[in-house]
Amino acid sequence: MKQERKTALITGSGQNIGRGIAHELASAGHNIIVNGSNNRDAAESVAAEVRNLGVDSIVAMGNVGFKDEVKALIDESVAAFGGLDILVNNVAIRPHDPFLEIAEGDWEHVINVNMNGPIWLARAALPHMIKKGWGRIINFTGMNAQRGYPGASVVSVSKHALWGLTKALAVEFGSKGITSNIISPGTFPPDGEDITNSKKYQTLLRNNPSGRLGHPSDIGGMIAYLCSDKGGFVNGQMLQINGGTVVQF
Image 1 (tube, one colour):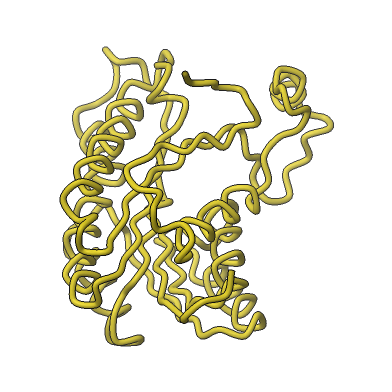
Image 2 (cartoon, rainbow, N blue to C red):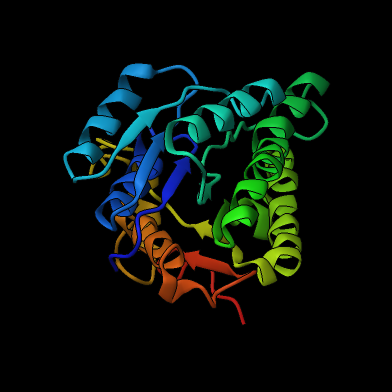
């Protein structure tokens, strides 16, 4: 799905799913802005990997839970490439805290990273997409938001809010050539994780209708399609990438 080269910012792309997305979008011919909040070495490693795929890449560090760092992140991205075409709001935190016990400050931190960060990023990125008449925004929800789990109330709230944001942006900016969609991933073990000796992962594996767990390329491939010209008519949708663990009607 090669096309005119675009520029993509992927938050939390120094490892795991974010790294896989960076590889897939680079393979499709897009420049990549690799983002992390603390491990610059990991981010630089991913940037080097995608440069080997024949595209340009920079590292732009910043914690999306802080509004001033979000502004700096977008400013650095635009200064490097002259614009921004694709925003993938991948990064999130998922603490496990009972609803009646989570501290107010911890609640606010999760909301800032998982919900406000993507909002701030979209508000900063959209003017550049509108100027070009083309853009893609990809958000992430998850099974926590769809089903509800004990100890995950703040994660459910933050991720469910992104589903509402996605639908609103799809309707408001679709006529300007900008689509907005949301990914709901299943179980994706972290890079290098040994699932064969993990009771948790083996149980999840047995319960997955597809007989396997997710690989970052499963999500990366879908995002590459959404960011292609052929994916331009997919707008305002939640895309389940979980092997059939959650089936919607």
